[in-house]
Image (cartoon, rainbow, N blue to C red; front, side, top):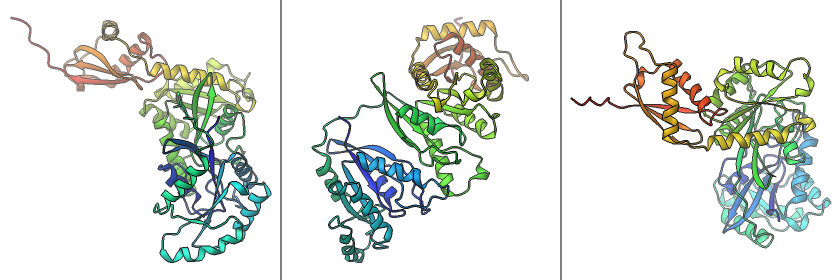
Length: 445
């Protein structure tokens, strides 16, 4: 049985996202005074007294979206309500009863969700505010529970309400994800279409409008008996073109998603040349030492104009910092090679967890030194390597003991990394090399 679902609904600017973050104890959903920031269904797994449930944040009911996505937002709200075991209908105690509150109440009754609804009056952070919440009784869902999501007031009572509603629904314990995969790329490369293909449903909004996705959305799905989390992120654009704080927060969350992912799917629009934003993302992925797949999406639209090998060579030349990354050719809209790309991601994750013995590592080092011995540069002595060992995984981290770490040039470090990648089972993932000083022992007299 799936986990019980608790959905948060209400009109814009009542603090739904703040309540979501308060209950989940993490800053997942973007909070901003701009109406209509949340568009997709944002969800996370929560636990209270060993009871697990899925908490879902939704877009604002009745929002007039500036990108004409209101219909898509409403459809995501309906998806959430239809599946929810408990619906938290949030109203604003400061502003009082509004026409959109009545519209939301009518929506809930029209879809026969009344028995699952609990009324929550948010922003009750001053004593006098709870005196005016009686008017919300007219919505037809009983007395409102007073909370302040920002200050945490009333949270324990709300948690008790949730527990009472979901405790007997399921005693399932969610499986830890076998792998977390982040989808990144510039705007309109098809990340959301790719996610929906994996989920088998319209899990996130897909639109031709650039910048549709704002939050980072975690989507759990099963493959080959394993739980996988795919993280849909906002499309990245040049910092100089960020329109407002919402786009800034969205871009920041995309960066954080790279850091918490096990593997990154770097989506690139095959119909367009690689640009500045793509190169910046490549540098960020390389700096974080993340296994990465270069996903050439919309390949069906350019197939025949250039060969896969030619395109692969082009990407290696223009983004050399991630030259280790394999290339996958996909058409997300047709579901072509979508699951094959996930299989490849699993292989890269397995590589990143691999450990090799010290003997194998030192043999690889000696082969590299024999093929290309380090030379002295600019009047300085040449570095002398003693031995090497792997100290961690994800990424594989190799310490090389040398007489002087500063004697190792960037070119020679690159040479060693490439030779290790050829010789060791790390041919498609980043390797971190750490040079550590060790004094050369005196020879016996």
